[in-house]
Image 1 (tube, rainbow, N blue to C red):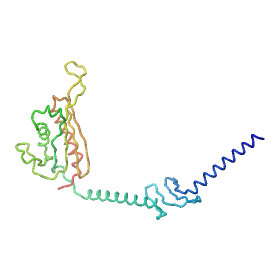
Image 2: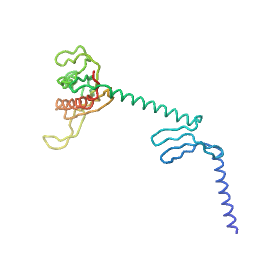
Image 3: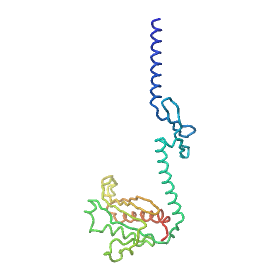
Image 4: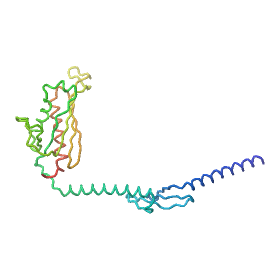
Amino acid sequence: MAAQARHFVQMMISVCFAAAFVTIAACSGGFYTANVNDEKKVYHVDEHGAKTPVHETSQNGKTTIHDADDPMAQRQAAAQEIAEQISAKRADQLEQLSRTSKRQPSDPIYVSLAPPVLDAQMEKAERSKGAVAEQIRSAFEADPVIRLIEDNPSRSGLLKPHVAASADVEVLPKVSLKEAYGIDRKTGKPGKTLAVVFEATITSQVPPATYNVSESGHALRNLEVSKRFAKQVKQVILEKIGPGIPAR
């Protein structure tokens, strides 16, 4: 009997705790979120536990406001308005781009080719100041479509850039020397070697795009590596960016 009495008292204490917890939760009020058929519904819960719809979001992201005076609903409405404005702006930009006539394949693409950034080792290895820049630039001069825009009016000779124009594409190159592991051709054994690394960030404003390319090889084959690098850059400009550039 004593054991049964203790068990009954413990049950009553548990029930009282549970009731007290429910009462506290109900008195405090708050918000309740439910997901029904992939739709998110938010309710406000008052001190009596009654639920009032605040807002709900459908599968396609459309939000319906039920209580315009609720602070949470107001924040949700403001966020949705901003999202709709951004979406409308993007749609307008895409529509304008679709209406804009594109350049023909043979039309020139004006490119701003910045002087390459050399790391400390490459600066020491450069035969004469500006030699690497001239080496890279010369790879673009013979291209029938790419036109390098004027960046230094004092340049002269065969490598002089074309007349100043607004750039369709910007190219920011970087050249560095790094230690690498390779196979020694004389011994056939693996060992350390010095590699030259060409990198570039290629940016287009219309259409908005950014590409990164890199090419590396043995430092003694510097000229060969730079030509492969320039070929990669030109492929990005002509094949990926070029078709979307508006006609001038």
